[in-house]
Image (spheres, rainbow, N blue to C red):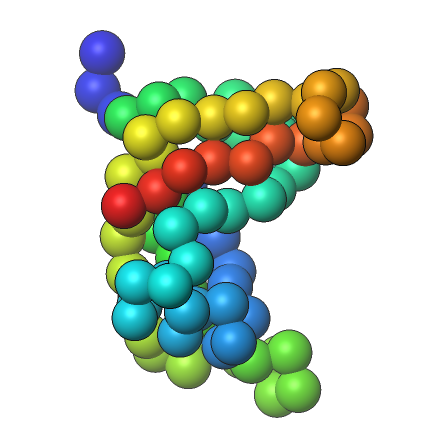
Length: 82
């Protein structure tokens, strides 16, 4: 089965941390049926100007921890990405 590509808005501080390798996870509402092997296309979004900056990075989902467990709400997930 071909992996799904999910396009997601990402605020500048989080985008930069992903780009430089210090943030290796995403916490999101699990409303897209995320799966291991899927690609997250993260598009930097400036909330002040309400526009995309043009910076984009792709990351693969390696592991998913779904709620409700370990303090994660039902309907949400934490994904390990690289």
